[in-house]
Amino acid sequence: MADRRRFLLAGLLTLALLPGAASGATRAYSTGPLAYAIPDVGSVDVPLAVPDKGPVSWLEVGLRIDHPRDSDLTLSLVSPAGTEVVLVAKRGGNGRNFGAGPGCQRLAYFADENFEPAARARPPFLDDVKPEGRLAGFNREEASGQWKLRIADDRAGAAGTLRCWRLTLSRDVVQTQSASRRGTDLHLRISRRGTTLLDAAPRRVHPCACPGDGPLVDQPGGAVRVRDLDRDGEPEVLVDFYSGGAHCCFYTDVYRYVARSHAYRPTVGFWGDLYPKLEDLGLDGRPEFRTGDDRFAYVFSSFAASAFPIRILRFDHGRFVDVTRRFPKLVRRDAAELYARYRSGLRSAFPDVRGILAAWLADRYSLGRGPAGWRVLERAERRGELGRKPDGWPIGRAYLRKLRAFLRRTGYA
Image (cartoon, rainbow, N blue to C red; front, side, top):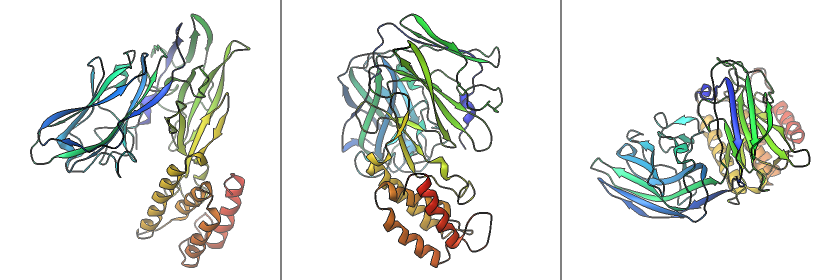
């Protein structure tokens, strides 16, 4: 399980939007599909041009590499100014590849806020990896110019191919943070063009039960971010929290500037057990929150046997809007992975596929194919795959009835 304590912070936090700070525009830059040879022993730099000017405030690297032995490789990002940050160094043992599938379809992503440290990640590194170096080291450097993905192979016996690499980068928002362990109270201070507009305790849904108490951050940029979420030219301030406990709960305070009251107002995004990934899925400069639907937890099975259909939300001027159906490719991929889990789950020693099938059917509804998906569940019921003995959750026909009502209540059907 990822170490969620890395977000813990107690004390004073200050964030300033400095005079002249722009919108924090976020854009993705990609090489597109490649077939760039990686030598067996040697190093290559693969360039990617960023034409847009402004100081870097956040970035993420995605890449797709075919290589029969990942531990041969050290991957680094090099800025136009020559700063080099190691993404992953000789990890993966005898595992193969970074990312999966053809071209740029399924990349391995590296960002500071990701949970899975590079040292613990496993090939093909699809679990959103926290790099070995800190990408925040590029903050405030000029974004425009030629960035490079540096690939070094220092072990003979295997060559590989770079299929794609992508840089998602935010510019023009400067943020400063300070933190102290002097106490357990937290204050958030937001200054805009030199004037302090917020100096108060952040809005908290649940008092943190984690050791040390307080909101979740261990390092600058970890749990506090500045992004223009609705692409209106006015950046929002995001503060991430974790309530503590075995399974719950993550949530994000989003502070937006309201011009008519000249103040910052919070909106809470509640994620439950599933921490969201913030990325520009539409490549339009407007990032989305990509997560799973936590409402499916414990409803049809235990937490361990529950599954969560993909859920994508946008922040739009003070409210979160579900835009999952605008991304059918991602939903189809999620549905395919859930169906594969269902089939493999039937072969386990103690099969329980009720949670997986519920999430799969929700994805089918998001694709507009829900009614056809019921035929799969009807066949599963006839084969006795929906439980045979009472265990605290619905089985057989009772499961189907509850699932139908649940999908209606949650807006899928």
